[in-house]
Image 1: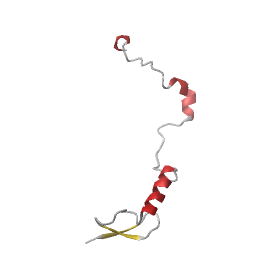
Image 2: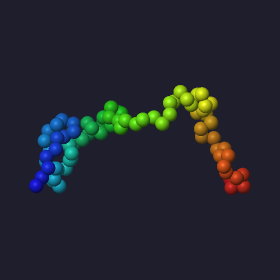
Image 3: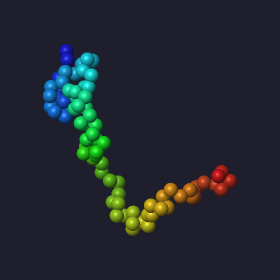
Image 4: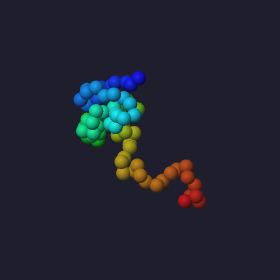
Length: 79
């Protein structure tokens, strides 16, 4: 018994089996179109931000300090 699904790009029916080279896509073209959509961020997985970015300014966050090597939890002798 084989399963038939719709190609995510063009909605063409695709038989889901071992011989279906581009499953779930119907062709390499549709696969590459989908990849391009992800690469250009046309497709994205929605996420809920954990905090509001404007709060970073209120907290005194500075991009320049982000990569400084000053870990307050690290002993000087371990450097």
